[in-house]
Image (cartoon, rainbow, N blue to C red; front, side, top):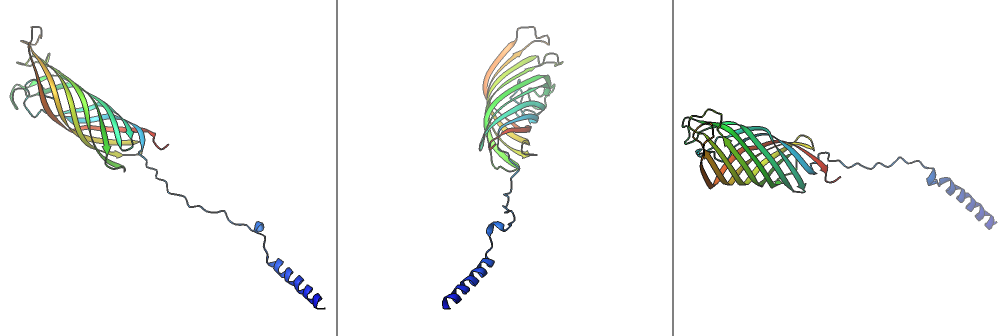
Length: 245
C-alpha cells in the first residue's frame, strides 16, 4: 500500500511540473534594438584640393626707379592652386599671372609726371601649408618658395620723358597665414596674406623716344626686395579623393 501511495504522489508531481514548463522555442521575442552610433557627416579629409584664385590685392617688386612703398594692385581670376593633403600638412603648387596697364610714381612719391605702361608678372610657387584646426573654419599657416618673371614697357602709352623696358627676375620666399571656411565638406572659401622676400635681377633699357628704335641705355642690378600682399589670394577650393574611403 505504501508503494502504491508513493507512485501516485510521483505521478501527480510530474504532471504539475510539466504544466509549468514552457518551451523556449514557442515564445516570441521582439527583435533586439541595437543603438545606432552618431555619424559625423562633415568630413574634410581629402587627398587633393584644386583652387581658383578669385581675387588678390598685392604689391610687386620695384619698377624702374619707383620709390619704396609700391602701390597695391588688384587682380581677378588670375591664378590656380593645387594641393596634396597628407594628414596634417598640405603640399601646394600654384601659379598666377598679372597682365594689365598700370600707372605709378617713378622718381619719388607724388612726383609728376606719373609713368604708365603695360605690366606683366608671372609667379610660380611651391610650399607647405599646416592647418591649425580641423573644424568648418580652419586657420592655417605656411611658406612658399618661388620664382617670378616681371616685365614693364611704356611703349605706346604717351609718356613724356620715360621710354623704357624693365625686365626683372626674382627668387622668392613667401611666409603666409590664412583661413578656410568650408561651405560643405568638399567646397571651401579661403583667404590668405603673405610677406615676400625676394632676391631680384633687374635689367632696364632706356630709349631716346617712343619709337624704341635707338640703341638703349642699359642698366643692370641685383638687390634684395621686400613687398607685402594683405590679400595674397581669395580662393574657391574644391577637394576630392576621400582619404578614409
